[in-house]
Length: 138
Image 1 (tube, rainbow, N blue to C red):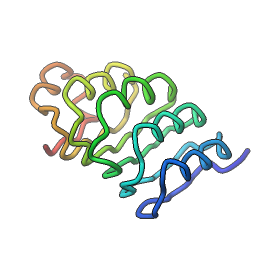
Image 2 (cartoon, rainbow, N blue to C red):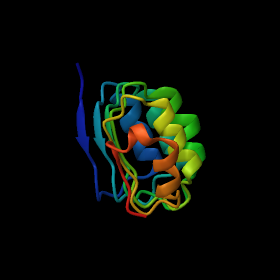
Image 3 (cartoon, rainbow, N blue to C red):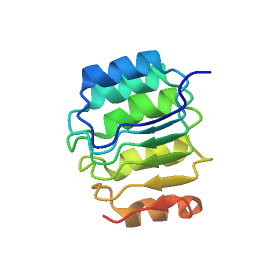
Image 4 (cartoon, rainbow, N blue to C red):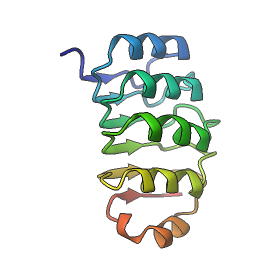
């Protein structure tokens, strides 16, 4: 079985700490690690590699420098069960990165991307069938 739900929001978690969590909690399905500015793209990659069962992931305001690359190389390639994703405050995420998520997860139930730089009108026009699950406030 193992740990399935973990909330480390507003804790002081670093890449090294998240690596330990990911390596020892491969059964995680729900993870909230919002408001941890010490987490980088490397942590997203490690998490995705070790926790393929993730269904709900909250990475709001973890690091404003995370880019589309984290979405393309980590989350979409290694988290096939993802249903809900919150990624507010990712200023370097563009409409291209958001499009990757939408295309890769046709069963996505919820995507919240507050304050990302991807133009919401572009995404909504390109993916009209996804407008029910997307919550933008850019």
